[in-house]
Image (tube, rainbow, N blue to C red):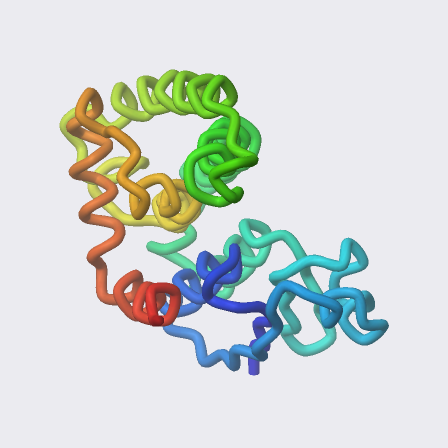
Length: 203
């Protein structure tokens, strides 16, 4: 049994979504932000003292997108394709982590995460500009196709849409990126995404 440690209101949301897409049985072990993340038992799974973490038999993993790649590999095609498309999945997953997420989080921290008195409008604007530059790239990649790699949904879509979920849910202006907006709607209204969102968005 796959065991996911975290709370749906964290990056563990991405892993819940991926497990649902993969059709794999899993158990969510509730672990929120707080001292539990620094407990010795959890540090054995994630020495960074963060969430999420995963156990799959003898394997322990941290980093949400690495966990997702593992889950997709267990499911196999089409979620994790073979050949060159497997390399493209890795490319877009790393792009999500290194290019998209830093800009998205710069915007998020200074728009809705930090208390209002601690937000920096200049940092929010810089984050928005950085995110828009990455969305320009994504807009061009999508073109007339439905998904990142073409006409088949893969874990690359799950990973990138998972990174963009916070911006989407908090009304980042996607008006100039109509293909991205339509793609995010497709991603986030899939049955697996709705199952994960039901946990994430619960009161």
